[in-house]
Length: 313
Image 1: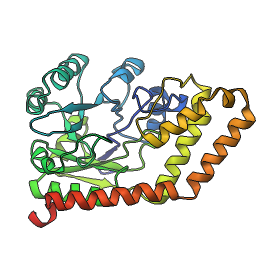
Image 2 (image 1 turned 90 degrees about the vertical axis):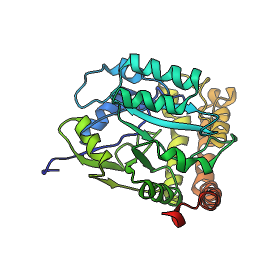
Image 3 (image 1 turned 180 degrees about the vertical axis):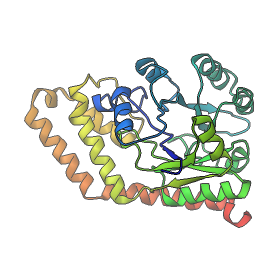
């Protein structure tokens, strides 16, 4: 760090994202202060298809870099939804990108816009696919060619992250490491590069002049994450605002959310505590985590067979 290396976690969600529980310590102000406290050199929030966090914080806070995670479905080129992090954009650029993504559904046009406006961008978790939606793993290698940087995501299994690294090596792409946190655990992994400005920092990443500090999803980390969600659902979110309209999009967690909304649980704090302890007990057995990891490993093996990245490097 004394030699000018800067660190940043370039994929962080706040309460402005639809799938983050409305807890006070996950709002943009709290996470911004936390980022300063842990010594992030650049701070960015990449909420799903919204830049509301910057309207709340202001656009010119110290170390703050405007960012967003944009969803785009291109039926012809991709055949599934991609998530793309974009940085250093303003509201006008964001609105124009949303129009391309939602109305035109044109990934190449979207990327042409990013390049024309010289906006830094990243292909997030290339081997993530929406639950219960059509996925097209065979398209991922050709999609990766369009991006300068791919993401090593802490919430993916090691097998999937290794596929991403193999993909980057095959096409000469750079890699960043991110938490993609939805529970406030930012900065546990990060990307190191030199640069007095974010633009210079990101240019060095694009050139491969960077290091990544990584951690993969394990059974133990997943149990910890599930316990954090349970705490948020039953405790912290209730102390901030109503969660009656909140859903994560994750089937198992949404089941817990719906149970926590029960009028009986709201009426009886003791029963609410009993329900929370029951979910803790189930989580701590490790069975839900083990089942998820087993299914993800099977998916990773299927993906590897379908695209044969490692054999084609």
